[in-house]
Image (cartoon, rainbow, N blue to C red; front, side):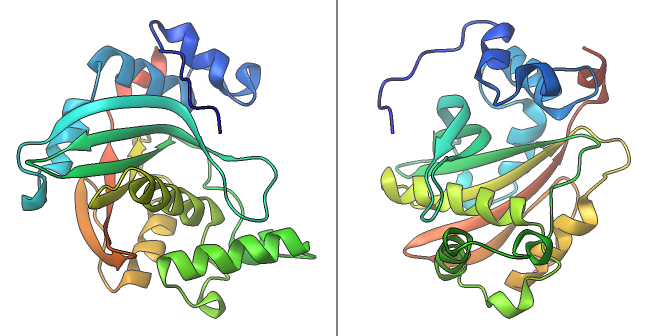
Length: 225
C-alpha cells in the first residue's frame, strides 16, 4: 500500500479518487453527497459527531485525519476494498479507526449468498478471513450484505495497524427513507444487539479492538448539491 497520501483540498479531488468517477459522481448519489458534506465540515460532520458521542468511551472526541476513498487490502483479493472515507480520531488518550460507508438510494451490494455463488478460491479465502476477524459463523451469513462485512473488517484492520483501541463501522446515510437500514440492522443483530437510526452500538471486542457500529442520517440538502 502506498504510504504517501495526497491531501484533498477541493471537491473535485474527491471525484478523482473514485473507482468510477463518471458513474458515481452524480447528484443524488452517496459519493457526491458524502464528499460535499465532509468537505464542508473539514472533519467530522456535526450529525456524525453527535452520534459517536453517544458512546461514553468517545468523550473528548477529536478528528486527526480523514482520508477519502481509503484502500484496505484483504486476503484473497488482488484489488483493495475502497472505503468511502476513513477517519483516524482520538478520545482522551486512545485512538479510533472509523470506516465510513456513504449511503443514498444505492443498495449495499449482493448478499454473501449471492456473492459466493460459484465462488473462486480467492473469495473463499477472503470470506473465511473476514468471518474469523469479526467472529462470525459463515453458515449464518447467507442473507447478510457483503459490503457491510468488509467495511467492518476495514475498521478493525486499520485499528490494528494504528494500534487503536476502538473501531467504528459507520453508515452515513442521506436517504430520507433510510433505504438499506433493514440490511444494516440484520448485520448488527449478529452481534446480539439492536440497531437504530442515529444510534451507535457496541458490537464486542475482536483482537483487542472494541468494535462499534453506527447509522447516521445525513442532511438531505447534500443530495441536491
